[in-house]
Image 1 (cartoon, rainbow, N blue to C red):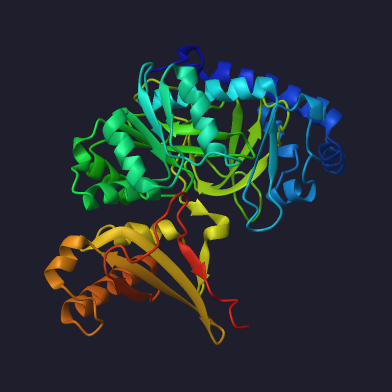
Image 2: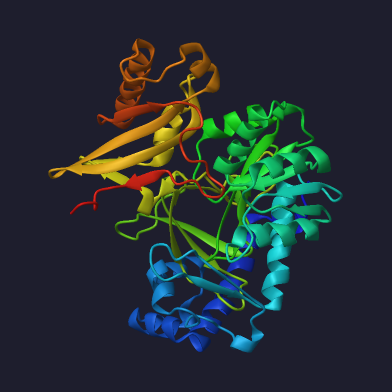
Length: 441
C-alpha cells in the first residue's frame, strides 16, 4: 500500500527541487534562531543565501551528539519554549541525555510520516497492532503509536517487558502487526515456545522491528519463528524518532527514506568527505521540516550506504541499506574492526545455537581479547544433557564456533557455550557488548 503516491513516487528532479526549497528555509531559520548554528556557520564562512543547490549542503558544518549534550537541555531549540508540545530524551547512560522537542505541527507531521512507514511495511487501516516498543522518553513507543492511529489502525500499547503477558495479549487480541526491537521479539517467540504454543499459528502477519542493528540471519529466524514478514525500521530521536526510513513488504531490500523530510548523506567517518552511492560510510541527516528542533548534517554514527535506484514496489525514494553497526559499537581487536552484527551472522548459521549471545571484551596486559558467550538450543540441550566444558560434544561445538568466527572475523575469539535461557534476555534494546577493559585498573 502506497499511502502518499504523490511523494513516494515523485520524480527525482521534483524531489530535489522540494528538498532544496525546504533546505533553504531550514538553514535560514536556524541561522536566525539558534545561536549555535549561527556561530558554526559563521566559523565555516557560509551564509544562508549561499545555499543555492543541494551540493551546497556540504558547505554546512556537521552536528554531533556532543553538541546536543553541550547545549542541554534547551540550547538548540528553534522555537520559544511555550511553543513546545512534547519532549523526548535519550537514556543518558553515556553522559548527559540528549533532549529533543516537538511543536504541535511536528507531532502531527511525525504521525503522518510514521503512518506512511507502517503502510510501507504492510499495515492497513483497520489493523490491530501490538506495539512492544517502550513508552516514555524513548521515542519508539509513542512515535509508532501516533502513526498507527494516523493510518487508521488500532494500537495495543503494550510497551516492553512482562513477556508472558505480551504472549497472552497476542493470543487474545489477535493483532495483524507487531513492533519492537528484534531481540525482544525473538524473546517473545522463545516465550511462546516455552509455554507450549505454536508461534507460527498466531494472527501476526508482519513485524516492524528496529532500534538496534540486526543481521539478516536474525530476520530469517524471526520470520520463520512467527510465520511473518519482518521489516527493518530506522529512526533516531535527534532527527525525529522512528519513521525516518523503513523497508517495504514487497522487496525487503533497503529502507525507503522519507526524504521529503530528511535529507540523507553518507560520509567517510574519518575525513567527513561524501562517499559514492553504494559505498558504506557514516549516515548523516539534515531535517527539512522540523520546527522545534531542526538539525543540520547530524552525524548519526550509524554505518550504512545509499541506493538511489527505484524499488520494484514502485517507490522512487532513496533507500538506505540496513545498518551494519554503530561507530561507537565497533570493536578494534588486535587491529581488526569487529561489529556485533558480524558475530551474530556467524552464530545464527550454527543450528545448535539459539539466537542469544553476548560479547565480552577484556584486556590481558596490553592486548585486547574478545570472548563470545552463546547458548545452545533446547533441542540440542535435551540431546546432550550437559554443557560441562570437558563434554566431547560441547568441546567439539565450541571448537566449531571458534573456527567459524576466526574464519569470518580474521581474529581468534574465545567461546563459552551455555545451556538454554542462561543469558540475560532483553526487554528492549539488547546489551550485546560487555566491556571489562576498565575493570580493576
